[in-house]
Length: 286
Image 1 (cartoon, rainbow, N blue to C red):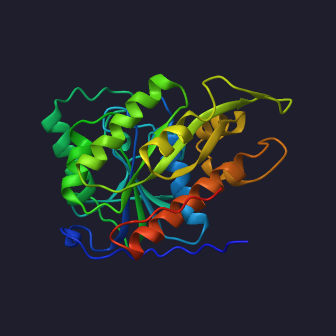
Image 2 (cartoon, rainbow, N blue to C red; image 1 turned 90 degrees about the vertical axis):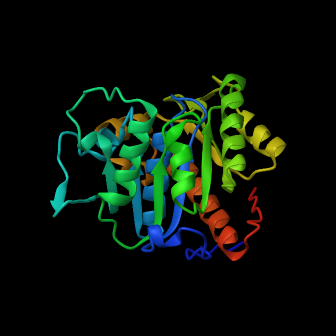
């Protein structure tokens, strides 16, 4: 039996004074949309909070913010302290999303520089972040302005890349991995989402080629944090804005809580190892 602990205080680095009250900033990205990146980001935040950490979540997906729905704050405006936004305190985490600052269902038709500026203001200038052990940043998909901005603004603890197992999605995920490597951002690991479908009778249906992300992680020499199958409860809880229910083990979810907890524990282990060494050695847990 291996006992895991998490060292949350990271080493000092450049631009650390930008958010000195935040110990670890973790980006969650994906090479393409539709792979469940925001779902993974939210549940990582909830899982870390359940482990006893103080956690913030920033919905940096400027063009497609889905956090208002998944957090259950759709249509609710944030409170202000002077000119600063006070993050929502919901489900035990401190959350900020662009979706709560604009008219509901209104598209943001912005060019790259506008998205860059909005992201920077929301992350650094206009939000009153409290002291946090972890700040999880849900990035927009792809390799555009916002991921580049984040890597330039902050000394990231590292990044998590989310992919589904089919080759078409993995091709884009590998591009996202290469982007973070090019920006000298440690890749803390890959998560395989929609690994397979869990039917109501408990049977497993392989829709996209289970195991593809794990194979890609091994090929790219990055940690594999775990696989998350497709559960009906995950969809129901996301639509209802009740993410904590994903961690309540019951016959209806058939392993959902266990799958999410494994991913969160493996990520916490990688963060701890990264903070113990500048080289950021890997921790692969079977």
